Amino acid sequence: MSKGRDFSSEREQCEWDAQENALRAERAGSGVTGDANAAHYRLIARALRTPQLDAIPRDFAAQTAARALREERLANESLEVWLGRGLVALLVLAGAVAIRVYAGESLLNLSFSVPEGATGGIQAVVGWSFAVAACVGISSVFAFAGKR
Amino acid sequence: MGGGEQAAIEADELGSSVSPEGIDADRVLVAAVLAGTHGAFETLVRDHQRLCWHIINRMVRHPDDTRDLCQDTFLRVHRYLHQYRFESALKTWIGQVAYSVARRHLERKRIPIAEPSGDEDSADLVERVADGFDLEAASADAEMGVLLHAEIEELPPLQRTVLTLYHLDEVPIPEIARITGLAAGTIKSHLFRCRARLRGRLQARLGAKE
Image (cartoon, rainbow over all chains, first blue to last red; front, side, top):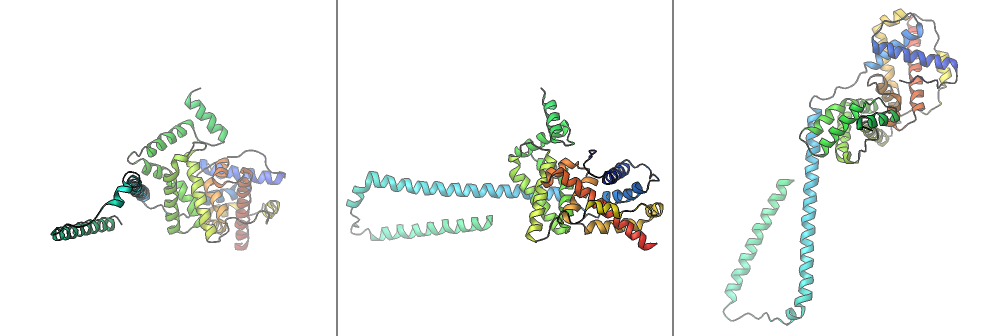
């Protein structure tokens, strides 16, 4: 509580002192004096100490804490996802660089001719590869939808 | 120099009412929240929700907005608690966040938070408040309480908040200045002018009744 003299006029300073005295008396719960100013300001101090505020919801703290933790977890998860993507990109890049450096010439010279009678086997391998890729894709979609 | 002495000096320099025990308690609680201790953040919210609620409710007045903005305040506190440097009491720091959240909300809605300064000379306010009226009748009249609450609601958001922090939450003027980012002299001036104005309105109503 301020007790300094910050008002230029004596009347304002007296008014301030009356306001502060009323506040102190109201906090202390002391009786109303016969002074006009004090009684006036006691009423005001009482009204200001009993404002018409909306009540805090009973479970506000628990709800807020739960939401904060949920947001923190989501933020961490998205960080993990981005880290994972970064690592995959790095892996692909490293693979491309390795192929270019160590096997660039050899790859260009490779012949992809298919031996006679092996066509059926290759078709089976390609078919099963698509099936595996579809399974992985569907699982990923369901996992992603579950997280959302 | 011991930690308690240092904390006492820090509190004294801040001009706040925070005791060394209060600062130590803040440090313990903040450390627990940052360490992810179960229930620590809920404790922090429970300890400071009253002040936060009062600031925001006084500023915006709408109960749903108050709840949302109050929650937003604590989510920000949770997100940025690692940046809190104990330069002021935790209560004051949270109060600052609450005040800035509420102020931004009002600015978005283009609601002025304070009336322009100097529109009413404080000397005039004092002059208008005459001395002669029936005080005992006023004290006994509960209707005056209703009138005063209505008049308080009519005050601009900043003035309502300053009065509530000072009278209800008993926050000292230097701390209110920190929370609102205004000078202590400005806070004192708001308090003085608002209370003088309320007294003027009270007296005018009593005069009209008689």
